[in-house]
Image 1 (cartoon, helix red, strand yellow):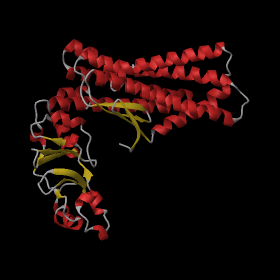
Image 2 (image 1 turned 180 degrees about the vertical axis):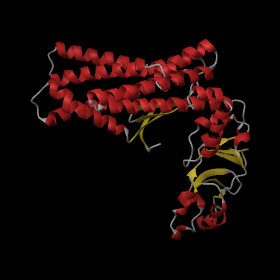
Image 3 (image 1 turned 90 degrees about the vertical axis):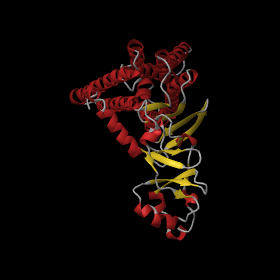
Length: 382
């Protein structure tokens, strides 16, 4: 994933944006400054249109954040942990660390985002109506109308019935309540998501061919993203179902090579990295307790005049979220954010390192999940 720019916290939830999110602001600003505003109030200098368009684009960006915050705040109220919210080129993602405890909670979390967008649409619509009644300038009224329409369209689009859209979550909640089986409901929502994505790809292609509209390329991109994301979500559900009775100790790589925090970088490179099959190494203190993580690529880039420095000077601190006892549920690893791109968890008994789990290990687990669910794999199109 691209580097995330931190934007602060709300109710303990980390808010961030990828650099690609600037594309949203730029695109909205361009549409407003060169199309919407000149049509609404012709004859103004270009600088005037841009002076209005840029703040409106930022407001729209904030609307996307409100949409995601609605999901996350309702999730917290329903007892679901929220790791972060990340805004990016195609909108935003609320990263929930748990499944909803009940279908009713799942429905409430899913519906919160579109409802927030509809509420914003009504708010901006009322603002536009009042502005018109007061005979306000078109450069004030038109942005309010545009924001009202965009928020309503955002809510409607997100209610399309297929994962990973909010409508797919709503569908999942309804089917979960009907089937009493979250896995079955999740797979059905994933299949629906692939169908919705395919429909958007076809629609976008038709736009390009018959109307020569560049917007068709955007529709195709969104459809492709939905198809890929829906299949990934279905696969993840299969794997979690496979691992529901499995413990971390059963899937870990036992007795990994570790990096002594006090050892010199040069010695560690010569004595361990040169002969190890690992790319990432847990760093341990003199008592054998894990205290950090270091990647081989990072150490090989250390200048030779610093090879006498200890490994601890180059390690990344190991967060508590990446420590696991061997009897912890293995399916929890699937939602754990890796450290140094690869290390998912260090398995410890509280005193020493017993093993570790990397993203490569998770790839093997994913393959196991698909092989153990051939019928579901076929239903996902895999």
